Length: 514
Image (cartoon, rainbow, N blue to C red; front, top):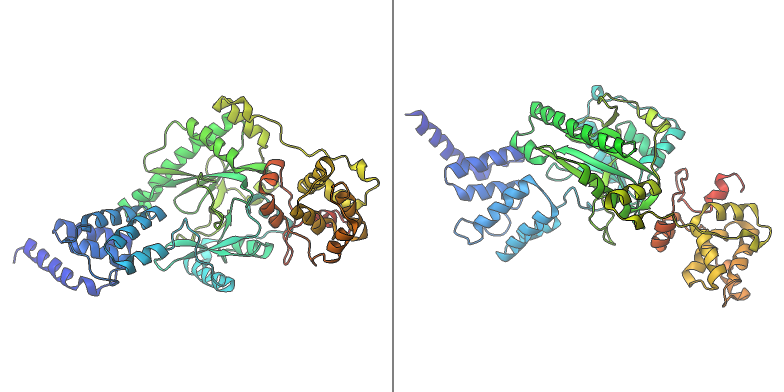
């Protein structure tokens, strides 16, 4: 028997048995797709994709006689290279048009890296993620990092985003990286586990009031390159050198702008470039600054992609937005730890960065935007609240401390003085902060509200008697006063401790006055 005839017979045998074998590897999927195309077995091409994405045996089989066959196969090939929510919706729509509603439902429910994963029991998430990290990381691949409590708090202040949520990296049913949301504040003990390699944590970078405290550029080898070379280590390293060349050019741009940027090896296929802000700034300025950087980048190297955090996608009301893996975390698939590097891409101790790093002010960012956008109106002094504290006579030391350090409380009190009017929610916000500062704090609530036209002592006293057990949190205040806290600033840094949500009241406790 001739060799080619023998090969054809073996291939025919594989084709006959193909539907009895389960494939979970994308490189095998792409190889078989190419093989079936070369032999004109198009129905098997579609089967490869449907089986890999676990929809093959739902609803009826789609054959090459179907009018949508070529279109759905074309979309599958695109989806395999770039698994985006948009592509999943396209496949869902095509299946709906073919009345394959079971297949369509699978793509509607599919969890993708850039979407919020379904929230499940917190302890279950943590246990699953810990097992996955442990299975991918041998003891020889990382050493436990030892940090003091003060260093972890500085780590939290520098890198952690939104305080009321965080995410744990895990693998979904297809073996792909995704994040499970944890509806709890991120605490010291969780960061310690992250740094010890026991779990990998991501942070939601944008607050509810549309502010961010850093910008990150993600320089990566493109997924198409990884698929083309089937994730071969030598090719990854070759393209990672190209990524390093791209990083060097971007670092030069920042230096010309007079800014310090910090480079982190992400632990797999690229680098994160961190720019830290002095305060939480409105996300629109980060976007405007990104456009400046994009305009100054002369060339994006072939095979390299650049992604920005925050991106320009508007965060919807019921979503939490982008997640970024916190530094020094274990990449759940590669088993490698991320780490910061110097100009020669030599690893540096993160403790050095925590002790000495630069942050840029919003005013500096505005000046750079104005220079390159030719828009002088961008540069304006930050909004300040000028409240004459002498109007209230001799203030209790705790009340005065909170007024001086919480911009929002100062804003609301100033509004009462200047306009003689506060909405009901604003009155309650003042009560839910100063009402927890003892008798003098409650007296101050009366004092502030007495500036309003419809103030009544008895009504105010009734609300004081119904004061909630705990003060209102900073997170709730930012959600209620999104525009005010974004424009006037809300950048207080409190120690994150268990069972304690940050509140303006903590200013008095922090200064040891309560």
